[in-house]
Length: 418
Length: 89
Image (tube, rainbow over all chains, first blue to last red; front, side, top):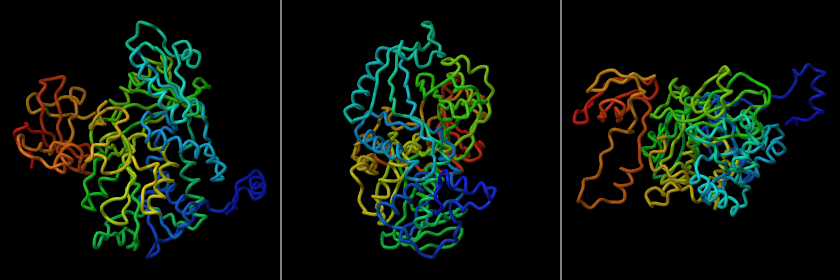
C-alpha cells in the first residue's frame, strides 16, 4: 500500500494526481471466509481492521448493502467524548479516547481529530449537583472533568444568552476538555483502506438476504451477490439490526428511530468546542469549514426513513436560538437524517448470541460515532476469541432479562422519549 | 409533518399528538405467576418492523384519548387509525 505523506503528495503532483493507488479494491465475494462482518460503516470497518491487526484473522469480508461511509458514519455530528458516569460506559469510551488520539498516525489517514472540549450546560442548583457527581465519577475513572460556574462558562461562550430572566438560565456546566470532533468520512475511509491492505475484502452493493444456520451454528450468509460460507458473522448494522434479526427469528431490545441533524452556512470562527443544551434539546459545534453543526431530538416514532420531518428541525432550532440568539440570522445549508438502533436502556450491546458464531454489535442509540474504535476493538476480540473482553462485558444482551441495566440517562425503556 | 386522524376528533397535525410505541404489546395477566422470560418480552423486546407498524398515539393536546395507528415506518404513510378496543387487521 502506498503511504500517504508529504513526499507521496509531491511525487504525485508531477503526474497531476492521476496515478494514486485505489484506497481499497472492489473484489467479488469469495465462496468462503473465516469471518464475515455485515455492515460497512464505522463499526464494521473498525472491527475488520482490528480482527486483521490484533488477531491476525485476514480472510474476512465486510459486506455492505450500500456504499462505505453512506450510513450513520457519514450522517452523525462527529462528537467524540467519554463523559459517562457508569463504569462500564466510562472505561469503554475512555479506552476509545486513547485510540482516537493516535488514529491519524495509526491509519496513515488524517481523521482531523480535534480535541477542543465539550460543555454540558446546567440550569439549576440540582443539575449542578448532579454534574458534580458525574464529574467525580468520571475522574475516578481517569477521565478529565471540570465543573464550570456561570462566569467560567461565560468566558468560553460569551455569545450565549446569559440573561437571568430566561426559561433556562445558565448556572454553569460540566466540561470534558479532552473531548472533541473528527472528520467522520475519513474515519470510515481510513479503517477501510488499512483493512483492505491487510487482505480484508470490502464488498459494497451487497445486500444480506438470509442466513444459513444448522444445529444452532452459523454456517453461512446469503447475499444479493451469492452465498458465502462462514462460521462467524458479526452484525454491525445499526438501524437495520431489527430487519436482520427478523431473518434470524430473533427479537431484540432495540427499536429503530429517526434522528436528524443540520448545518448552517459557514461563518467565521465563533464556537471552539461542543456545547450541549439538554434542557433545550439542542447541541452544537462548529466545523472546520465554519458551518454550525446542530442536532437535537429524535423525530420520536419508529422509522426506517433516512430523512426526517420539519417539526423536529423547527423544535431543535427553537432551542438553539434560545441559547445562541445569533443563530436566527444564519441560513440553513442542509438537513439530513439517519436511523438509530435505540436500545431499551440507552447503552449498546456487544455480545455473543444463542446462535454459535453469531455476534451482535448494536444499540448505539445516537452515540455510535465516538465509540467506533473501542467498539471495533472489543467486537474484534469478542469474535476472534469467542468471548467478551472485560471492556464490553457490561454490554451484554442478557442484561435486560437479568435486570443489570446501564441506564446512563435514567430514561427507562422508552429511550426515544424526549 | 404527519397528519393523524384521531378516531374521536378527525384529522389533526402531528404537533397535537405524543407517540406511545408499539401497539401490539400485551401486558401479562395480573395476579398470575409470570416467568422472567414473559416479563422480558413484555418490557424490553420489540420487533420494530420495517414497513407496516401498529402503534399507539396519544391526542395529548386534544381530546387526550389513546388510540391505535397503522403506519408505514419507511414512507410514514398512515393507513388506518382505530380506537383502543378496535382491531386493526
